[in-house]
Image (spheres, rainbow, N blue to C red):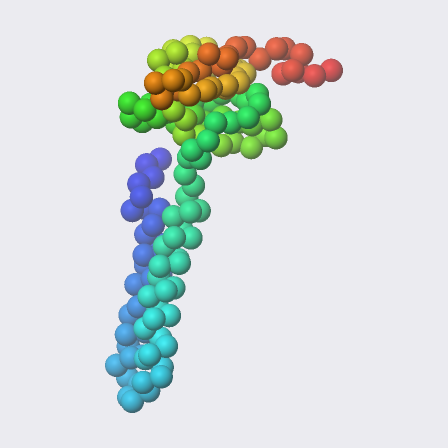
Amino acid sequence: MDYSLFKLMSPLLILFTIMVAFYTYLLIKVPQKYMFKWIGIPLLLIGSYFSYTAYEQSLGFAVPIVPDGQFIYIAHRVISKGEVELWIIEADGKSRVYLIPRSALLEQNLDKARERASKGIVQLGRLKGRRSSNGEWEWDDSDFGDIPMEQMLPK
């Protein structure tokens, strides 16, 4: 299925267009009700702003922090020279997307994890990074590996 932003927002846009058309009709038909107009127009503008921001937040976004503890690797993608989106399942079972600083070592580890995961082998990961003296991130203590069978299939 192809989900574009327009297809996702079209129900909201249709509803908002109907609301604006109805309110415009009321503004034209209700003569000399200035209080109705003074209250209604700002409420319509404020309502449209909050409905847009609430809808945008419901779509989700990557969290710009480094995940704590162990997680199950699902996927990643390099966004720019300095950032990587990492999709994981945390220890509590929730799926999240993180935006983390990129480094060559991290990208190499993530590519290996992607290759193993594409073969159907569940990858367990842990990230520990620090900022070096030149300001770049180093992921020396980060590791990815196959999930132990005892952890995958507990007795």
